[in-house]
Image (cartoon, rainbow, N blue to C red; front, side):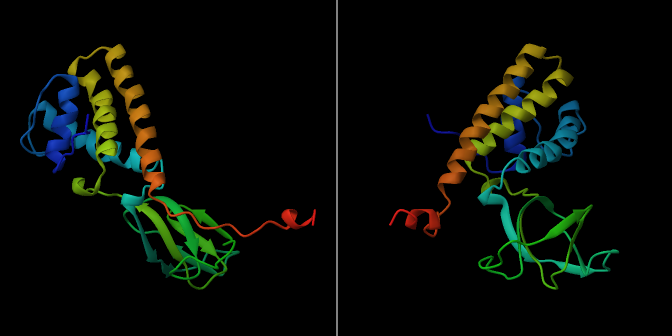
Length: 195
């Protein structure tokens, strides 16, 4: 069976409510209890799940903006406002040949001895159309698990929804990993030892 795909945040939230009891909202600004729950749990649940994997559909790269360096470091760079999870840092925009990139993260800063820093990171994606179906389904299950107790649903039901979200999220991670092109690794010096 194909995984359904939502086209808006309201559609995605209503799919999640459907896993609990079929309640619906017409907008995230609704003043009913469900609207309040949507505002309270939508973004935090999404950000939590985006932070669990270097999702290709929610990854971007930018040159970081420098700021005042802290003691002991030559340079400091601010992480973007929509930053969720660090994937990689580099001294150039193509991220190849940068080697090990010594740095330290402190709050929303990257501290380093490099004068230019490029950052590949998972951002706070809100465009539902960019989210694959399996990720959306895992979100619906987890969101339903979080709002279920507020809608007088049993702990058994909400635990089951959370466990199902973990299984579905694992499938989504596997699918996301298959989209990566794998680089050929250089031959190891160990291979030539027996020659």
